[in-house]
Length: 450
Image (cartoon, rainbow, N blue to C red; front, top):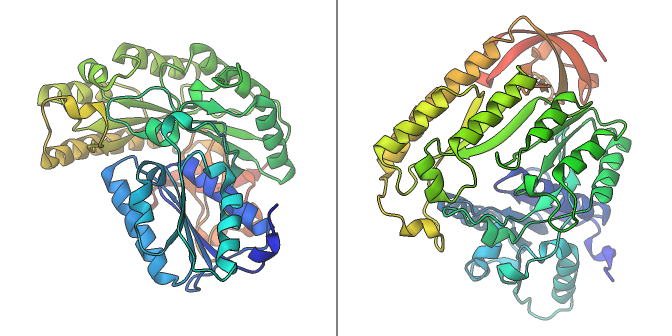
């Protein structure tokens, strides 16, 4: 039994590193604590409780996690500091050794965060010297699924539909940090979407580690899920955060094209445009399959926005193989590239692959692809100048311009003078004008409301 009175009027700070899934989980934890009487600390205020949800996708991510923990401990002397997430799972002892950390929770324990927090807080209140609590199990024992559907301070909601991954690509530690693939049943996810509609939410982003693998624990499929979600009244838009190309079936693409609420917006990890590198990575597709998916999306939805993840400088990526990637991407009708320099991760099979790319060359390759990305995004936006589109706007700070996204994920901006509070979370028809390069957006004028 949790005694919620111990949290009443306690001030908290929440800090998230990493992916949209982490953001969704942190927002859910914050909402649960708020319902128990916790208030979020204002800027400059010291907190009684600090919650840090960590990432460990690269060594740089680990470094940022350590920096964030040290900073929050330093700025909130005496606070109860909880660290969870992927870094906490993979490096539990390392996190526990940081001065000021009170509670460390791995991926399996995250679903019981409130209970662990309550127990540890009660111990602190007992008058005994506070002891560090750390809880994590080995990857093979990670079985729990922590539900999460929250928007934090944003307009869009993030609904966690799946967690974990069974793929074990040679460069990746995520299966070690998150465990095997598992998911909530469709009925519970539909119920959460219905609750979002009751709260006035208009858009939901489906998140997970490998969401196309949905159904491992319930015998359902991702196609079953999106068909059911499409029928939820009140939700105007859904976006699929990221889906593996081999799991993005032709039927899923066809359904999204004809659906009521699924947007013409896809985020698909490629990682490399070289079949040789894809094999070294143990990816489950080749460039021919990837190209087929892009062509099919564009066939059904010519104006669809397609974002693509690419990793550069992986072990084994010779200059010739990088050139293959560049040429493949140059000829692909995609809208944006999310470029990541490869980072060595302890315990991964990639460390056995010969040929190492030095840091300077990684940066050079990354810059080449980022320049290519800018050209593709600019060309995609340019095709829509002068056209009308439906935009869901988000509230802006007073005196600042409002921003929002079209159905196909073009970021648009209203002039500050035309921004109005009543536009927040509303779908407006706009006429799209020229670029605002500083904000990576198209300027827009409201022409009508829906």
